[in-house]
Figure 1: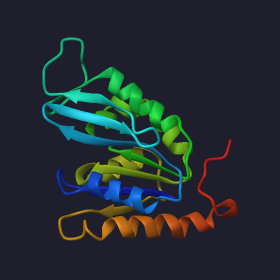
Figure 2: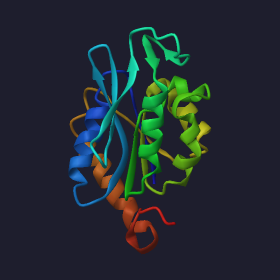
Figure 3: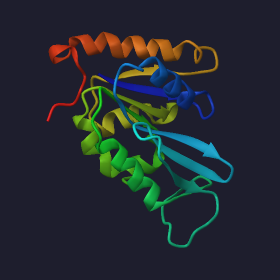
Figure 4: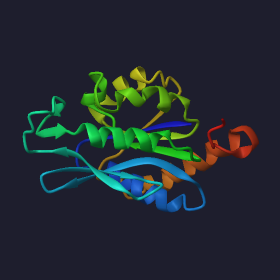
Length: 177
């Protein structure tokens, strides 16, 4: 199952993921969530709850990966990629965007993402079709999140995962070695 959660900036994509993770308490969830902080972005490994600085608004000479007001740190990107290497029943990637579509950021993890059997990826609306194409996710379900539906989306995400989980080999989305 491949699910793309799309929405405008600030509509609640990350919050929906967090609430869906709570509903999936009996499943093993891997991947990462990003959080806005004053002056930057933090990235949190879902399995370990460890976090790292992903991006800063302060210009740093050694950083060449800049999108909008953010300068992305190599260490934060590497941290996120390591989070994606972990196995689980469900993998969450919050988020894929302009940086990855230009061949930078988490782009190096695209082969890992293609291997995941049960994956949820957030992206902005304007990038949903491009993310789907870049990952060759022809069968991906795209769910739009906005202020009107964001409160019901975590349960819809959970129901979608549970429905598709039953259709996998022996009823599990767990990645096979």
